[in-house]
Length: 162
Length: 157
Image 1 (cartoon, rainbow over the protein chains, first blue to last red):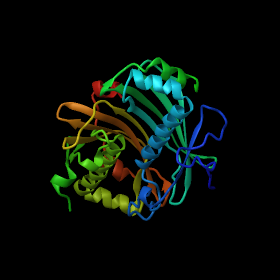
Image 2 (tube, rainbow over the protein chains, first blue to last red; image 1 turned 90 degrees about the horizontal axis):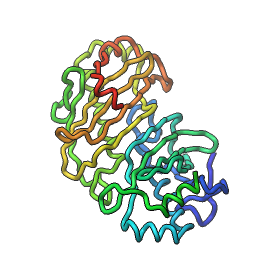
Image 3 (cartoon, rainbow over the protein chains, first blue to last red; image 1 turned 135 degrees about the vertical axis):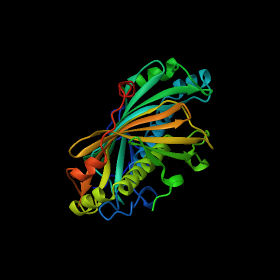
Image 4 (cartoon, helix red, strand yellow; image 1 turned 45 degrees about the vertical axis):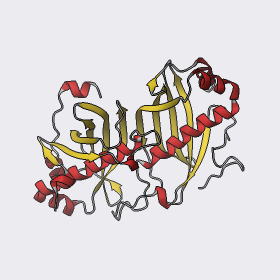
C-alpha cells in the first residue's frame, strides 16, 4: 500500500488528519536507505538505524511547520534564545514489522509531554495502516551550546498540540 | 578469521571494541549524530557474535546445523544519550548479555570515552531462522551465558 502526500507539501509532510497534533511525513525507501545485510533471509529489509534518520526528519519538519504556522511565537523564541535547537536525550523504540525496498512510509510525530527544559514526542512509522516502528523520544532544549528552559512562547505552542 | 584490532575481544563475558569517530559520523554541529551510535553498537553486537563463534566453534556449528542461516534481529531499544562525543574521539563499545531467554536476548551496550559514559542502551534481539522467530538453540544459549550485572548498573537502566 502506498500513501501519497498532498501536492505542494511533499518536502515537509502534510497535516492530513486535520488535527494539529498529528504531522505526517512521507518517506520513500530508496537504495540509499536500504541495507542488504548479505544474509539471504534478510536482504531487502530496512536497516534499523535508518528509522532514526526518518524520525529525525519527522521531528525537524514538525518544528519547521510549527514555525511557519506560528511565526510570531517562533520569532519570539528565536529572539529570547538565539540559535536554539533540540537534542535527543533518550529514546525507546519498538520494531514491530520490517519495511522493505520501495515502500512508502508515513512518519507521524506529535508531542506527548512538555516540561520546563525538555519535551517528549511520540513517533510512529507506518506503511498504510501497518504500524512498523513506534518510539518515544525525549529531546532537551539547548541554546548557545547549553541546556536551557524552553521559552514560554515555544512551550505554549507545543502545549497547544498535546 | 578474527583480528583483535578490528573485532575487539571478549573479557569476562563482555565484548569490548574500539571505534573512532570520523567526520561521516558527525552532524552539522560537529557532535556525533545520534543514529551513528546505533551503527557502532551493531558493530559491537556483530563482532561479539563473531568472536563467540570462534571461541565456541562446536556450539556454533551445532546451532548452524539446527537452525541454518540463523541471525538476530533488533526488537526494541531503550537508549540514553548522556554526553556528546566529538570528531576524532576513540570510543569503547562494551556489549554485555544481561538476560538470555528462550527466544530473545537482552544486551546492555555502552559507548564510553575513557571514564565518561556517553551512551547506554538496552537492546532486545530475537533469534530468527528461515525468516521466522525461533527458540534459541541450547548450544547458543550456553555460549552466551548471561553475565551477571552488578545492581548499580541495572538500577540505572
